[in-house]
Image (tube, rainbow, N blue to C red):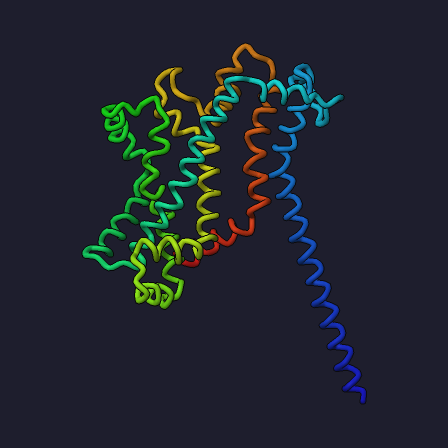
Length: 298
C-alpha cells in the first residue's frame, strides 16, 4: 500500500514538473516572439507617426512618438502630386502586363516540360534551371547593349516584354512541379477524347493551377510595386516614365535636398508600403501554401 502511494506521489510530482517546464517554455517562446514582433513593427509605427506630424515636429531633436495633432494633409499632398500619380499609373501598367504575362507564360512552358514529349526536354529544363545560378548583374551589360540597339532604353519595355518568357525559371519550376503532382489520367482521358495540348492546358490544367497562379501573381505584384533597381538601370534622363518605387526613393533622397518636409516623405513611404501589407493579409494562405509547395517540390 505504501509503495503504491509513493508511486502515485512520484507520478504526480513528475506530471507537475513537466507541466511547469511546459509553461516556462511557452512563456519564454512567447516573450521572445513579442520582442521580435515589436522590433520588426516599431520602424513602421515610427514612420506612420512621423507621417502624421507637422514638419517642425518631425525634425525635432527630442523625438516624440505621437503627433500633437494628426496632419492628414501630408497624405493629401502626396496623393495630389502629379509626378506621384504619374509614377503610380506607370507602375500599374507594368504590374498589369506582368500580372497576366508571367503566370500564363510560366504555366504554359511548365505544362510543356511536365506533360509533352520532345527531343532534348530534360536538357532544356536543366539548362533553364542553371540560369538561376547566374547573378542578374552578369547579364546586365549585354542586355543594356542589346536594348539600346532596339531603342528600348528609357522605356518600360525592359520591365515588361522579357517577362513573356515566364518571368524567371523559378516560376516555371514551381508550376512544372505542381502539374507533375496532378493525376495523368485527366490528361490521358482528354487526349483520348481528341483534345490537343493547347486545349488540355487551357481547359483542364490551368483551372487546377489556381494556387500557383495566385502565388505567382502576388509575387509579380510585389516585385513590380517595389522595383527600384530596374528603372534605375534603364533610365538615362527625365524622359523615362518613372515608376512608383523610383519616385518615392527620389523623393526621400535627392528630392529631399533643401527640403525639410520629413513628414511628407514619411507619408510617401507609408503609402508605398501599405498596399503589399494589405495584400499579404488577404492572400496569406495562398502565399504560405506557395512557399511550402516550393520548398517541398524543391
